[in-house]
Image (cartoon, rainbow, N blue to C red; front, side, top):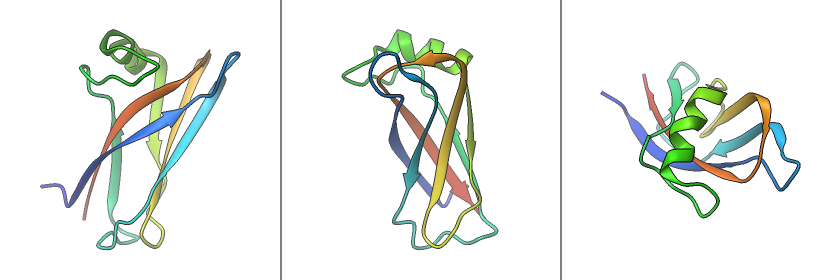
Length: 96
């Protein structure tokens, strides 16, 4: 059972975009250095920049990883072999 769940927006910037982006997840007062964090994409999410269809393809183009928790936060990293633009919603969970 997850101890923490939430959403974040990861931004690849304006055209021509970037192959990498990251977002810090803060304010997790119960997280510990031994907690496990995970990020994923929900097929029906949208942002002002991208549709649900874009989010479904996003999962095929991007690898998501999370840094080890430090203090009350962790960072979600996104990497793609293609340059991407704009903001995508990612969801996260962590547990001990």
